[in-house]
Length: 112
Image (cartoon, rainbow, N blue to C red; front, side):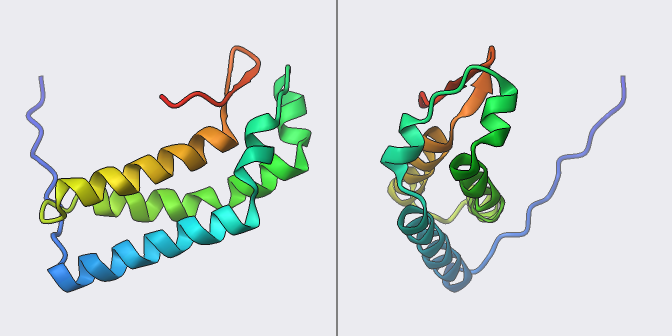
């Protein structure tokens, strides 16, 4: 069995973290203003083809990578208080659930 070295993650300064948190909150707000979460949550599909053909959902999916990338960066920062991390995560879950994931040919909007 190979030995694996732990991956070292660069810790941002408190000021950099604060800037990234503001940036993520701005991305969340922009997403919520651009894509109606109630409309996204109401989308029901029964095949992957239907999901990929849904223009509303596909447009929302295209805005997720920037959010995920920044959230993942912030998740590695040990100096961010737990309540702030939880607040950011809860907001992310609402957005992710609204877009949904395909599971057994159904669009799943549950929070996992």
